[in-house]
Amino acid sequence: MLVLLLLAVFLPALEGCALSIEEEQAVVPIRAEPPRAPAPYTIQPGDQIDIKFYYHSDLNETVLVRPDGRIALQLIGEVAVAGRSPEDLSKDLVEHYTREGLRRPIVAVMLRKSAVQRVYVGGEVGLPKVIVQEGRLTLSQAIFEAGGMKPTADRAMIVVLRDDGSGTAQVMKIDFDKEVLEAGRDLVLQPLDVVVVPQSGIAKANQAVEQYVSKMLPTWFSIGLSYLLGGRVTNTLDAR
Image (cartoon, rainbow, N blue to C red; front, side):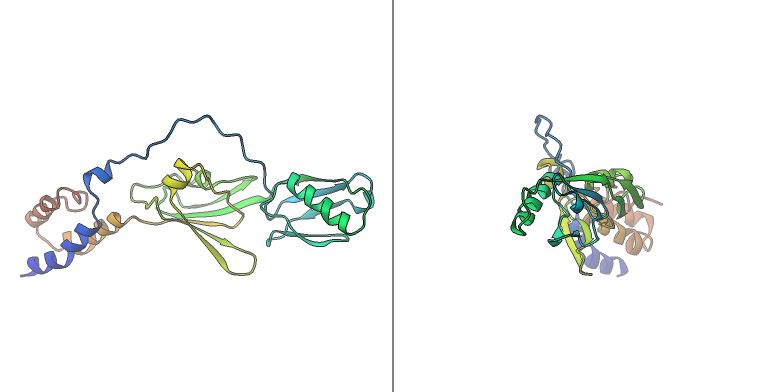
């Protein structure tokens, strides 16, 4: 009776979560393409930048980009700079100062010091850790630094949590194979980002079997159930 009850409860759930052999062996096709030119550096919170004026040196400043991605400058006040290249920001500042009546505002924006990246990576990775690095850090680099993804990871549902500066967490869900490997859209992380690699559905099913079924059943039944499921949970239903 106990055996039949356990089968009735767990077998439908396992059948729904288990992957077919074809799915398990599927390989993401990667097209051979020439290497892309490196993306221009974008300013990040924590960066220290120099604002230089060729004809108005009294307006020269060295400023620190605040956690909200903004800086405050003379005459024009608050400017959003995070996520922009120094060249793009230079053009924008020229327009701002021209509107304020400054004659011939030629402005250069130069990176003095990159922010120290402190990114948290956890979940189904080889070595959950805090990564400290100066300069640019992408999602794939952070995962590699944390020991890579485990076989139990849900690669299609990676979560990045980011403080948007207002105290509210911005939540980004990323399909690593589709967006990073296929499309080449490797997310550039910001200081204090939290990367969470969740567990896949089949891994959760295997864990449930390990915790609630296989340890309660005799060896002969574990082997039989493994056979019925086509060997898809043999890692957790092996004979003891």
